[in-house]
Length: 348
Ligand SMILES: [Mn+2]
Image 1: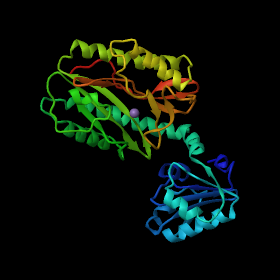
Image 2: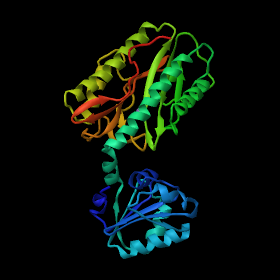
Image 3: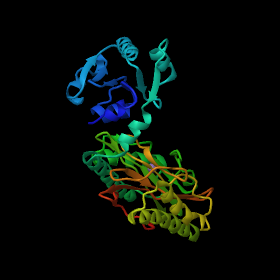
Image 4: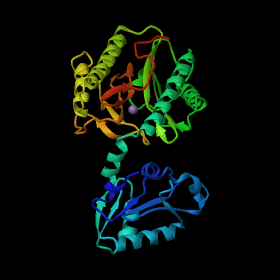
């Protein structure tokens, strides 16, 4: 991997975030540090990972097994010898920064934006892993639908979805699964409870698989029993909002802010004005939320190799919430929707 861009403004780059460690080396053992300079790529780890690093860290790195104390000394020396040192400001704690830089008058370069820029463009191999991760959630969703019965609790459905993901090959969950029934779904980030499923409830399910270090992300909302007219209307608004964003991208539109705007305009011109209370989407990769950002304030341009969500929603307090989330990518200038599950209104 070409990491030259990280040494553009500094002569030593200190990498500490688990996501960047994994991205650069293939392994993110806790407390590891990568140190990059013009002629060296060093992976510092502690004795807990001495065996694991032999097979997991890419061969371009020289591995150094050190205690925590020794790592600190090693980094301090490297910083002293450098003119400018780069650190990940989004990751490094103030206390660690103080320990490493105390007494030195080095200027510090923030590497977080450059790393985000590297990570937002996925290689073919990364893309293929993410597609597999999303195919796992498609299968788990089919299983989840078969479990919707009167009296099932949010918590038990959550458990079943997570077990299904594992049984279909996931290494774990990409984030805390959301299962919300009826009025609970009006909270976009609802926490699972023991609430039981009743006829007339909506069922919002938002979940993702972690697979080979990469995340997937997926949301569907279905009806348990006949939907009210209001729900039906709101559902169509959310679906139309998602379609508007997808059509914009299919026609070659590449402004993240414009994608958000066209989707939001559908909701704002409906009876559910003001009820789409979050951003349209986010990049997905090693982390569940990463660059790019699809929002009204985003300045990001959507490009080949990016993987991101399109997830409009409508939330009506005390009644229901609806979100439809797809994971998409741009390949050779064309938009591909990665998830395959049905999005039309669905009644169990
Ligand atoms: Mn999401």
